[in-house]
Length: 473
Image (tube, rainbow, N blue to C red; front, side, top):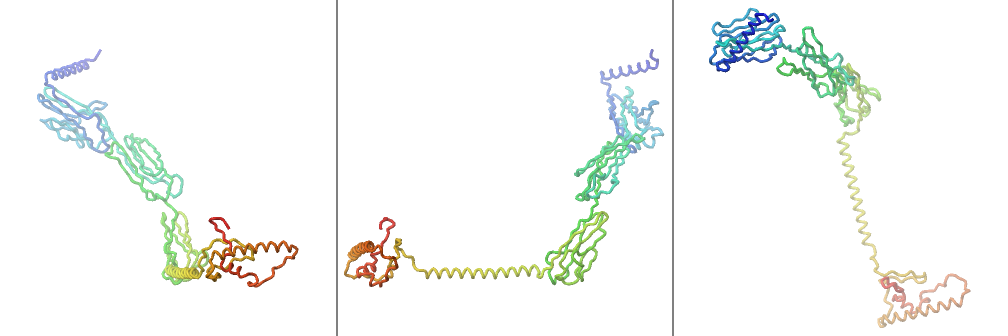
């Protein structure tokens, strides 16, 4: 059996529902309350609870109010009456107010929100003759995280193992914050969550990386996202990588020569932390006289000498390590410009000698070609026995035939004479086969040749020619 008050309440609700139905049918009903379904409030800040009232033309707003639902029941936190004004309980008087109370707006603002403010709030509107209309919203309190970045426990040293570079912490957030690192390095992130006693959560994200000097001064960025934040919270962190000195020597340009003055060498070091020790030494012998060391600079207070050539060492140290750089100095007899001028002069002399030589050879070739005999345009002569040597060239032969004798007659006589001589020679060989060989008796040209033979010899008709085109003798 239901209690009597419950029956009466259900009966009243049934009457209200019936009135709503009748009003909707007759067009009298026209009141509505609009509130957001959920509102997120940030701990320690203000939160706005919207309530918009739509009242029909046949209705009159008599009162609007806000109530908060507690385990012990509902309590009123604010009232607005167009006739009597605003009423707020003492416990909320210093941190709650109506934003702009009218017959169409019942919005309130709650300041300095705490965990105790979490709960359900209801906006009620009383109209005549309809009665009360209401709508509820849930207030959730968010805790904005406290964000900071801390360096790793160990210093970043060039060439070391994987080390915690930095840790980004979003502390005591509700709900837990989303934390990440932005970087173009090939590191990795480690995430840890810690639940706090007040219902908040702390998030820590560490960035691990193997340090290298090439990214000294590079910037990492911690990014935090949370509903209580209007935008992403970003914190930059600059890397500090320690490394041993990187040494360079300036001042020696390779053109140090005997007699040059005001020369020096400076040892420069790129180091983190900065270098705190500089030292100059000479490796191949003692440091020469007239040289002074001033901090990181080696000064030659006199003109250079030949014995200043050698190997010099610059040592630099910082808190990480000691490094050195060797420089080999060569003192020349002449400056670079003087050596260049000498090379130019030597080249010019060699070029002149070569040109003179070529001109001389050219003149010798031309003079020799002019003195050479003209080529003989004769046919090839058959090699004959030693006793039949060819006559001298035609140009040196005197005319041997009288002017009255025709050349064809002389040629015929010479041919007959050669045949006769050939027969006599064969007969002589057959008659004296036992004659001991020996050198032939020498005769004078007059004894050897008859007049006709001499004429044939002088005229050239006794020579034998080969016509290489017709192939006959």
